[in-house]
Image (cartoon, rainbow, N blue to C red):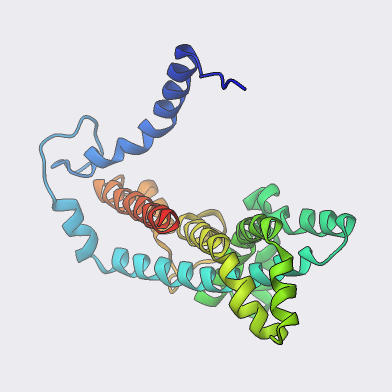
Length: 258
């Protein structure tokens, strides 16, 4: 059986599309080193001034700390719930699995602005607006489908006979899960956790609705900076956000390859 290689035209077209998608994101990197007081491209001069401003101003430091706190809490909660949901779905019939999977994936399908508007009323009633726990719960709703998808994909390849063999050798259900099932699910759990963290760390729409002065995330602070300041400090924050995401994905890729 011969494998057809992609044509040169197809390769060039794919490369052009990738450049078109990535180039606007990469432009913020040189802009962040400009010496001017406003965003301009090409940048004028080279300076680390705006990175110093980012870490010197408390509103930006607090926003970065809030984003890490919310993303970490979201990752833990979404990963635990996602593994439980994926295991539960794996034990259902095919029809029930499809129906419930569709309901769980709805946060990926429904526009985020609709989810944000739906959450605001119950959040205001229970006093969760402008709180870190409120943001964690809201972001978990968005991140949960990513964990379920990755864990469910690994579960489909899992040989359940290994679990039955462990049980037949005297292992309890908890021991069989901890020593057989859980190690097999680690790649899916790791992938789901990474996507959950990035989903929360980059999310801005829901955070705009329910965040406040005491729970302002970095994307919300960047949004405010673009609206009222148009300062290169926003480009510095964008570069740090981009580098953090790339670093996290690279570490996950290296770990998974190892």
